[in-house]
Structure formats: structure tokens, C-alpha cells
Length: 368
Image (cartoon, rainbow, N blue to C red):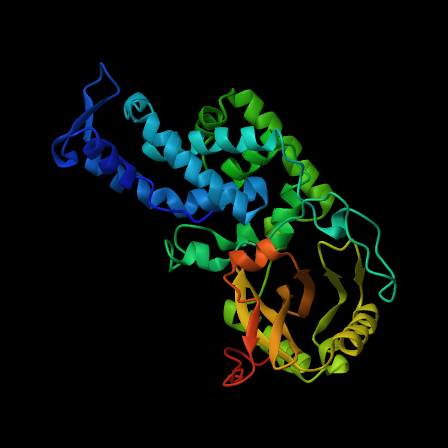
């Protein structure tokens, strides 16, 4: 669902009731003298939209669900505006509590969203593709959803959105997930986290300890996600794109780390190592052809591209690929092929070949 400016409802509701919203004053937090105008409420809460979207994504692992829950959060906040008491908590903390309640309710009926490498054993790269039955997979988050409200990346720490970390969070219970994100990612105090989660400081600290231990067992931590600069990462992927467009399997393999992983939800298949990676890519080019058009994308603060394969007189959308890049090369390629994910990135299903030009790929930053 596309996020809209739901607080235009404030004006609509007052006009619908025969009132001019500009002259309406709402009493908030009765007994403490806290007041605000309807027309000002949306301006106060709107700056938190982008960070709440990132928070809901970390909790749910789905861009689509995160958008829906932010929408729900703002509607709940509007309806509960008279209960907000700024003498007891900040507006940011209050909004996070509403968002957390929405997420916890949603997670009661939703299963965790893994990636194949966290679900099943590694596969034979030349084996048949096996779709996951009744599995809701982790989805990538388009950077464009964050860029509109945080163009300089000052509000949301993009490193805390990396696919590897998002996948690790899916191994935690809902409340452990909330405690870890609130404390270690968003730097809320234990008291604030307890208020947001509606529990005690002791309970928050206990959940946080278990969450940290579990994430460590999975083998991922934010500290371990050291990476080159954004320009250097893009340079690695630009080189990969050039090799891909030339169906140069050996060129692709030279860009990979020794422990590289390729996984491709909704398929269960995944494998590791440049050798297996190369075998699979040879099969891809044999089965799907060697004429491709690639369109750069960015997701979870990581570089990627959408791959269109030649079909007739045009190119049809085939996959969306998101890369994890280290100083030694590409260490993971997460390949997605679901229509809902394509839609969230605004990708056309088909591109006509006539008039389509391939812009030269320019490597920026240090040579890799």
C-alpha cells in the first residue's frame, strides 16, 4: 500500500463536520494543559515517518508490511491524539510505542521471514530449482522509500538495514527483536525501551541479552558488517554488471569472495563458493540467453540491479539482485523474483528494445 499523508484526514474530518480546521483547537492530555491545533498535529508527527518505516521493516522484514504498519501507526496516533501527554514522554517515544504495538500485533499472526541460507542446507548448483512451499521470505527495502524523507541518510542508519542483519533479526522472538532494535540500533535507554514495549526494565534487559546471544549464534552482528564506501561498493557491482552483460562467467567469478553465497527466494536453492556460483551462472546464460538489459537499483543501503532478459522485440523483467560487498569482493548475491517485490521498486514488467540505450557504467572511487 502506498503511504499517503494520512493527517490530511484531520482537515477532512473537521470540514466534514462543518468546521474550519484552521480554527479548531484540540485539548490533549486533559488535566495537564497540553493543547495543539489540528492543523499542526500532522506537522509535528510527519518528521518521524521515515525512521518509523525503517523500524517497522526491521521488525517485519517486509517493505509492503512496513508501509501498511506505518499507515496504521499514524491512524492510531490520530485517533489517540487526545491521550498524548507530553509531560510524560516525548512525541517520538509515544509514536514508537504505537508502532511497536502495531508490529507486535502483526507478528502474532505472521511467521518469521527467513532467507534460504537460514532455512535449509546448501544445494547442488546444477540441481532442479525447488520453490519454497508456504514460506514468506525476507524482502528487500527499496532505498527510494527512505531517500524521500532522509536524502542525506542522517535519520536512518542504513547499516542496520543490511539484508544480513535483517535476516538475523528474523531468528528472534518479536519482543527480543524489539528490544534489540530499540536499544542497540535506535539507542533508546532501557527505561524508554520498557515504556515503548509496555514492560519493565528488567524484562527489556533480559530480552536484550537473549537477543544479542542469538544474533551472535547466527554469526551476524552490526560490527561485523564492515564494508567499503558506497562508491567502492557500487564500483564492484558495476564491474559485475559489465561481466554479466557479456555473459562472462570467469569475469563474474573474479569479483567474488571465496565464501560467496547466492540465494534466490522464493526458491529454496542456495550455494556457496565461486565454483558453484560459476556453474549456476553458466546454466543461467544457457537457459535464459546472453542478451540482457540491467537497471541499477539500491536496497537496504546496498547496491544492486534489476535484470531484464531479451524476449522477442523487448526485455522482460527476470530478477532483482542485491549485493553484499566487502573489501575483498562480492560476498553475497540475494536474488529476488516475486511480483510484489518488483512492484515495490516500481519496475516495469517489460521494456521495449527500440530506443533503449545502455548507459556506460562508470566506476567511481578507488579502483577495485
